[in-house]
Image 1 (cartoon, rainbow, N blue to C red):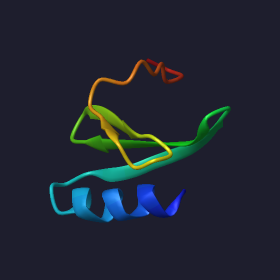
Image 2 (tube, one colour; image 1 turned 90 degrees about the vertical axis):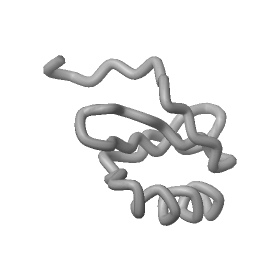
Image 3 (spheres, rainbow, N blue to C red; image 1 turned 180 degrees about the horizontal axis):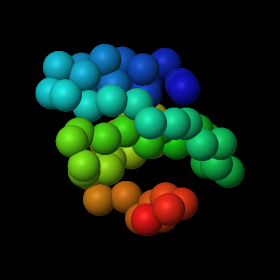
Length: 59
């Protein structure tokens, strides 16, 4: 995770988000997080995407 992602994630933990995994992407690491059953993602610059186009295995 980048420093920006870590800072964003630490703030989001107070809202119940948990880190699922970090995927290496061409534009930098993508941190996939979840709150209850809702997925979200943190881009390399720490921006929150609450509607990521991510397909998880087994779903």
